[in-house]
Image (cartoon, rainbow over all chains, first blue to last red; front, top):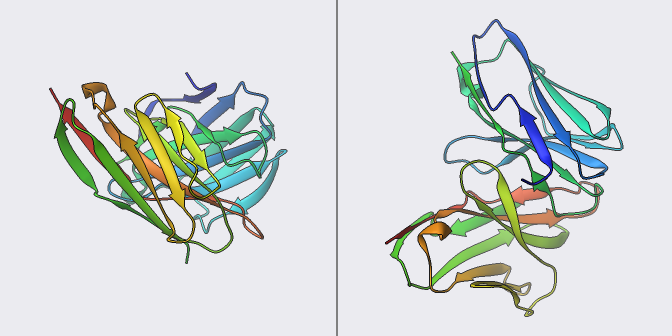
Amino acid sequence: ETGVTQTPRHLVMGMTNKKSLKCEQHLGHNAMYWYKQSAKKPLELMFVYSLEERVENNSVPSRFSPECPNSSHLFLHLHTLQPEDSALYLCASSQDYSTDTQYFGPGTRLTVL
Amino acid sequence: EDKVVQSPLSLVVHEGDTVTLNCSYEVTNFRSLLWYKQEKKAPTFLFMLTSSGIEKKSGRLSSILDKKELFSILNITATQTGDSAIYLCAVGTQGGSEKLVFGKGTKLTVNP
């Protein structure tokens, strides 16, 4: 247990569905991250929030929409995804945006049919 | 473009063997290098290295950074089946865009 939880752990959705991934951290951290992990590729940073403000958006398609209502919660809203979006989506948090040690959640395994 | 390259991509050893995993990097504005172990899903933090030549050690695992040659190694001695995992190397950058750049990982399998 790293203090970062993610739900759901598994998600299967059709291309026309709308769903959301949730991440919660119990560590009192100020920065939260969304990563995508596809087979045989490095972890890809998608979004970074620091003190509830988005500080990084790495050219992610608009069908992925993040939301950070407070420093403990992070959402990833999904809409009209493509099969190539199937991957493991990992949430992480760190004490501050400038702190490198990130603690990861267990991930959500997403399958888009 | 910032790049982190790990080698080998996969490795199969027997219990008791010693393994060395490699990580080389090319990034602008290096700040730190981190090693993570990923078993089933969530990567777990192992080490953070910021200074050259200073070995970090935790039980059977150790790591060292060479900032001149731009690489790090992760050593595991007397391997056990529980060491089987993907080992991820990540480099932290600073400046305008602070982020972690990850390598593809080394998949280690330790057979009994």
